[in-house]
Length: 175
Image (cartoon, rainbow, N blue to C red; front, side, top):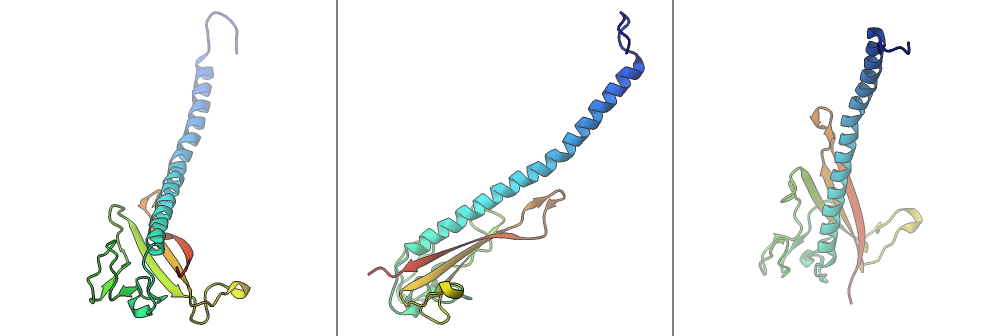
C-alpha cells in the first residue's frame, strides 16, 4: 500500500471487498441456524406451559373412592373417564353419564401444532409408581403424566420428527 495522495489502488479495494464479503457470507450462514434454535426454544417453552397447565387442572380435579367414578382415572394407557364428576372444565360431565374429563387433544385449542395427552397411574396397583428403589405402592397416590408433542422448524420448514415435553406429578388423596 502506498501512502501518497492518489489513494488506494484497484487491487487493494478488490481485496478489501473480497475479505468483507467472505466475512458477511459466514455471518449469513449462521443467522438461520440461530433463528431455528430460538424458535425451538420458544416451542419447548410453550409445550412446558401447556403441560403445567394440564397438571394443575388434574391436581385440582376431585378424587373419588371408586376408580370407575374417579375424575382422575386409573389407566396408564387409556384416557380417564368419569360417571358423576361435577367439575365444569375442561369438559363438562353430565351426572350419571359417561364422559372424558381430560380427553387427548390432537390439537390444543389456541396452540396449533401441539398435541397433549394426560395419563394417570394408580400407585396402589403393582408395580406402583417410580423406578427401582424409589418405587412407591400406595392406594392414596396417583402419578399424573402429561406429554405435549410438537414438530420443530428446520431449514426446510416444518420438520418430520416430533419432539415432546413430559411432566409428571404425584397427587395424594386429600383427606
